[in-house]
Length: 120
Image (cartoon, rainbow, N blue to C red):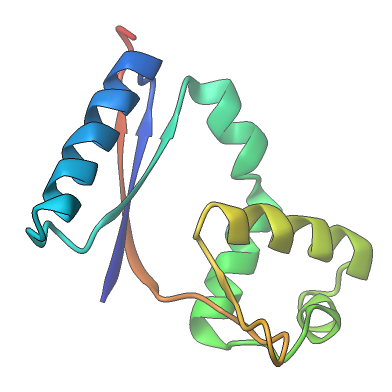
């Protein structure tokens, strides 16, 4: 089971501190949680990335991996160019996996938790 934690409203200082802790744990070969964390400075930044169509794309890949971007676009009833753009963004964030050899698309995510910091 892969888990993703999304934090909204984090400062750069907080994000760097988290990164530093993870780096030190890795350097000391201490295995932390298997959770992946993605931070966004505010709600606008998050919603610019996680659009409803991208959310649908991730859910579709969870149920049914795709052999290519073209096949995924067909399954979603969307334009190939737009799906490709979404795949690039989501893969860069680690939300979906793209096989370099075959072009296949999938996701390992089973669970996403989020924290929204209003005071940040």
